[in-house]
Length: 119
Image 1: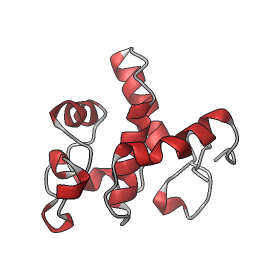
Image 2 (image 1 turned 180 degrees about the vertical axis):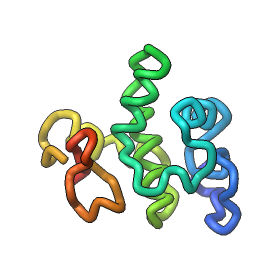
Image 3 (image 1 turned 30 degrees about the vertical axis):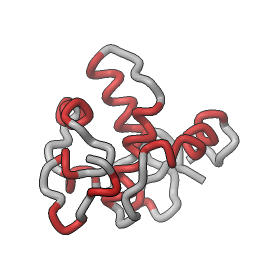
Image 4 (image 1 turned 30 degrees about the horizontal axis):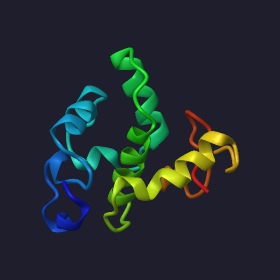
């Protein structure tokens, strides 16, 4: 859904989330995310790694941006377009950011799976 049209009070389906259309929703379902609440506390990089593994395809890195946008939204941040997260993803992927993940429940601790976090 277009981030400008998201109403947090009626987020029930995956397609109610910012930046999630039918194709992205299908990707999330493939990795075990069936409803928005399933994204709580999840690492966007781990979600991306799981999608690539399950589909045996290396997806475009902008998929990580989409996953960052929805994990942050579910953690309480306002809806933003996926490209608002490109710079943060590039910092992490280049090694310029601390090696650790954007797991909201992690309290700044590294993801126990991938060891990353967004700066």
